[in-house]
Image 1 (cartoon, helix red, strand yellow):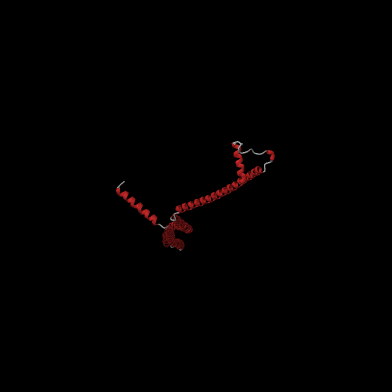
Image 2: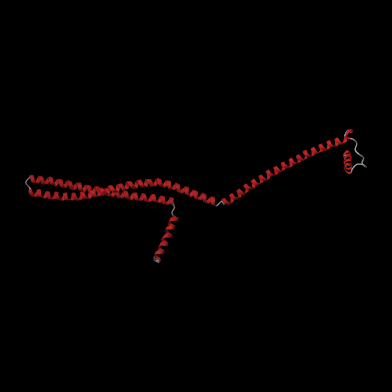
Length: 250
């Protein structure tokens, strides 16, 4: 592959890319409809010209055919009058008109086929233009929707949604953490309150038991016998007696 071929391909590729980027679908659709309508106008003019030519050929054919018939009748008239030379001349004119009519008939057949083909193409083009106009409106609506969506996505992309969402999630976790601390504090407060009441209840039992013991010690019956003297009592008994005296004083 030559250098110039490669350069030419690069240039063509860049030009095609530039043209593709410069194309606006809405404008191209509008221009396409305009171009097709111009083609339709030209095709209608071509059909009109073809029909006019067909009509002229048909008129010429009919005239030559009528002339041939007329000369045939004149030849019969001249021959009936005994003028053979005049009859021969009339037949010669008939032949000329007949030959011309035959040529015109061939042209007329060709032109009739051409007119029919042009009319068929004209109808097809009119149908395509009508369909294209309907599709154009639909495509323009889709183009506008695509542009609006592209603009929306571009706007959303420029809002730094990822950072905002991350901040939102952090705040959500922070709220959950604060709620957990509040609940834990409430539970700890309840436990402390329960422990205080439990201590009061246990302390009351001890006080009651101690009061009962004091009552028993203070109101001992004589049947239990007198306590031994301190001087003769064992050390344990002496300590017990001392404890009793302290209880009585309290």
